[in-house]
Image 1 (cartoon, one colour):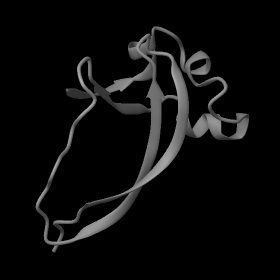
Image 2 (cartoon, one colour; image 1 turned 30 degrees about the horizontal axis):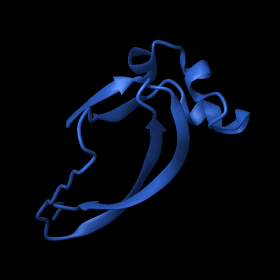
Image 3 (cartoon, one colour; image 1 turned 60 degrees about the vertical axis):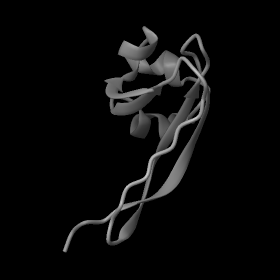
Length: 88
């Protein structure tokens, strides 16, 4: 599995409007377009896990967009996670 920050047009070969069409309303679109996304690419089995040791955590949220094997998006939602909080 690899991860990289990428703009959607570089991933899909289409502009943001075509890529995100049908996933977000017109009011939501501007908040989701023209931003970098962290893209996880996995060509093999979909098993992955990560563990990070931290003295505390903090809640964060972000967009999750699922793509099919042809890099077409088919689902989007907001996810809420607990992230390491190493600030003192």
